[in-house]
Length: 146
Image 1 (tube, rainbow, N blue to C red):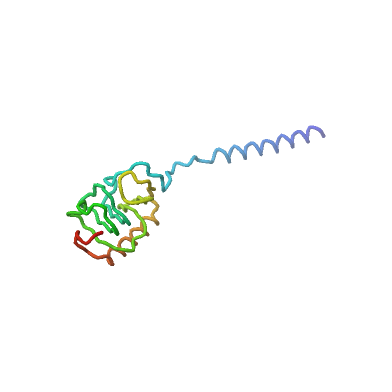
Image 2: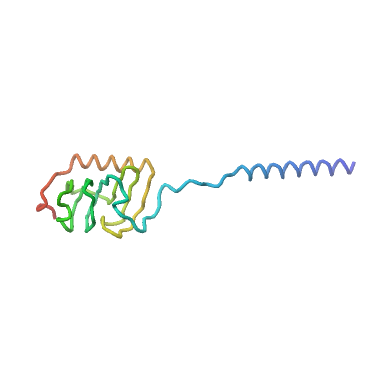
């Protein structure tokens, strides 16, 4: 009778150990990169076809193929030869690329802290917002910017 009890205990322990081994062995480490990350240093040249929306635009080298929506510009000369419009109700600072967005914590300028994201819904939403405001914004002469 004692042998049967030990046999049952051994069988149950064996089933538990095999179950744990299967469970732990089936887990795969996550190889996916996060959809967003902190941007300690960045360059606008990292962004393909940049579309910039800025409450305030400070000194920054902007590629010639950029589209810019701006409320205020610190240095108007930096916009010479660029495709830009002014819109007074801009809330937020970000640079949209074909597949990513750089969301900035302050004015669009070198060294500003921000967050890179490739999250598809955010990229699409900010792109939609940019295009919506672009159609409403005014094409203006540089002298009229404040």
